[in-house]
Length: 244
Image (cartoon, rainbow, N blue to C red; front, side, top):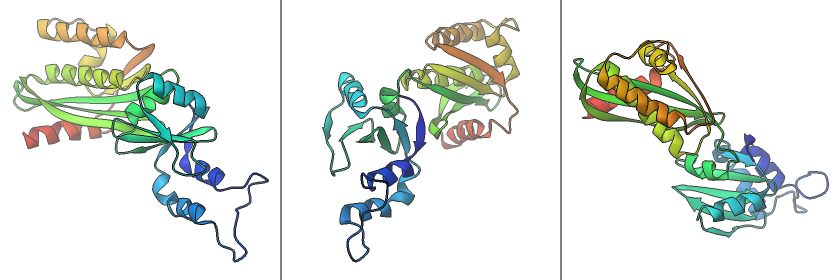
């Protein structure tokens, strides 16, 4: 229950008749009112992730997670459900997820949790000084979650570890079971991999915490990337410092 397509496919199927996919129109060449409404929304809906799945199984997963499922609003909708600020609408063989933040609802619907790419960055002004973290979670559907927050006064290396721990906690909370971590701190990457020793007691403690979180994923990797590849996480960390 994990493959994704764009929602335009769902709309196209929803408004097709059962015999060959031609659009249904009245004698004047117009579509029925409900189909016209769906067509008018295509531009808006294309950004919404669509999960190809058995809609009955998807409903059972939601109900098992304690999510209330209601009847659909149209003849094309099998059911709909709202959870964590997002709404899932089921059609034949597909569930469209819409809303400001769809990641948590997708995590409930997704079979096996799925894979996420996680970018993280820590910033400290003064080293040590006021510090913040930034992070971004990305799947095949694009950015599913991002954020930045201040974390007190600390060194830049400690802030980088805090950013790593934060993005791991967020990814874990969204239910992903595979994670690819990307950061621009060579020290953090090599210490987490075990390639470099950790002499600083505080950093050693943070590495232990990071490894404990990593064990909650079925598969993980961490790699160093240039700063320009990690620019969004860096931007979020610095915005948090600017706003503090």
